[in-house]
Length: 290
Length: 342
Ligand SMILES: [Zn+2]
Ligand SMILES: [Zn+2]
Ligand SMILES: [Zn+2]
Ligand SMILES: [Zn+2]
Ligand SMILES: [Zn+2]
Ligand SMILES: [Zn+2]
Ligand SMILES: [Zn+2]
Ligand SMILES: [Zn+2]
Image (tube, rainbow over all chains, first blue to last red; front, top):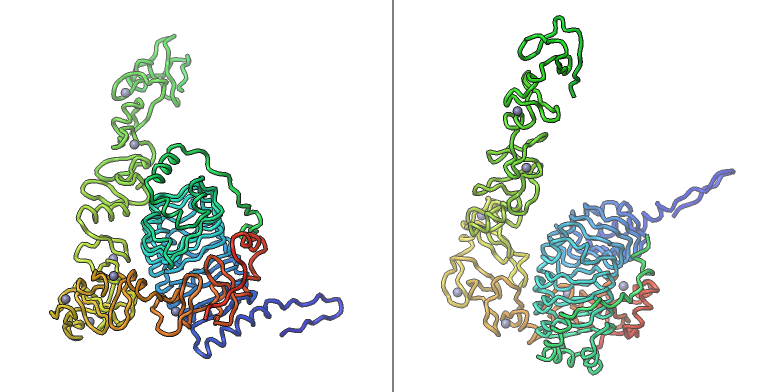
């Protein structure tokens, strides 16, 4: 607690930093005391790592949750936490990530959703054991992905919804372990045929894009079993796909596996017109606010 | 440009032939030195200087052409003279912009280069080319070429000397053995390395399938040792070859068949769920890991949650989503909060 001293003709003394500091500090002190390797620091009005003294020396920490704060910058020293397996930075104000994160030897789950990322650092794809990467609701596109992004072979879930992708790089096919791929509400104009190489995929979300056709190779995937989910609504599909979608996803998949569709697809690809217009209005996204 | 003037001819003489000048004869004056026009010529080719431009070296004047021929180096790439910064490399001279990597065409002047079979290459290309040509591998740690036998560890190849034996600490060579130190742990990221001596002290392992000693890499799983090629999925009998396997009732399965037969891997820890299972949103969770995907708060059967891209969001988190997102979600989702079916 703090008291505001006010003498005659004196301005009130600000004490906000001290108050803020104690909130996060208390959690850290407690965790140190009982040796708790999981740190819950969600919604603590934290704006910098300096409000969490000693955190970067707590190398036993395996989970660090900092969702719903106001953090703008992540210090490279966070990579000191060599035992960290789960890092949750959802809903902060982060514009840049340090490259050191991708050297963290045990990091398996990284959530940087709902931040203000315009780019990822060069070499970002070097994570040795990353399994779940959540980049939902940022300002990312294929133009600002680092060259090694699709080298993360250990990924089983990749969340890219609410970003600005127009094309998905063909290197997506390298993510052999991918089970979940979420591309909802980007500006995607087409999907690469390499998506058909993701044989383990059992969740594909492509709704709310500018897609007109699907690569026939998508038919190689098992997206209709009771262990799979395929969401493709709200796209300007060509009529035959749109018609099949009316009756159900399994009809779409049967259709794109047919010879007829292969012919329709090839004709559509060779007579390519201009892409459909962008329909998603992103001006109100909080990731855009500077 | 030298000026041509007429002055008093007493004690004036040509800098080259030392003769005097006759009246009304043209005289070349360059920086106070005088010449007969026919004497103001290149010291090499004895021709007048084109456009009056000459180069001086050790007291002699040369036309541009001869000065370059005699003194300026010639670029190996473009054949032009190199004026200014000269890169001396590969027994030749180069313009800084002409000395480039023969693989990627990147400039080498400041980055440095490596001579590889008579070619100048940048460090990156050299490593790649060398590895490719020689059928060698690149070290996952230092990105250098592995000249001797590589050490395979957790699915990657390395120079053995980057590692020490887990038991005795000695620097490893390629005889080192990778051991799955946690039987039953599916992934290879807990594997450890031992030198051959320490490994042998741990007992020569016998393959659980063929009952013969294992000289090469050993897989330890299900409480037994296996030849890499003999540790196979109980359903499809394909060897895992370092890929993930999943165990159930003393048998190992590949991911496909584990899923097909039993189904439940925790979305967070990716381990087989032995106790209670939470199933929702096309996923399963073990009791420890069923939590809000956005704030990691633990949830149970009683907790109501919202769906967002098939991830569970607790009420608190959902309320914090920006208005514009909720507006879009209304179009796409069934927004009624859910509970885990019991
Ligand atoms: Zn000359
Ligand atoms: Zn040149
Ligand atoms: Zn090395
Ligand atoms: Zn040893
Ligand atoms: Zn065997
Ligand atoms: Zn199998
Ligand atoms: Zn779990
Ligand atoms: Zn939550």
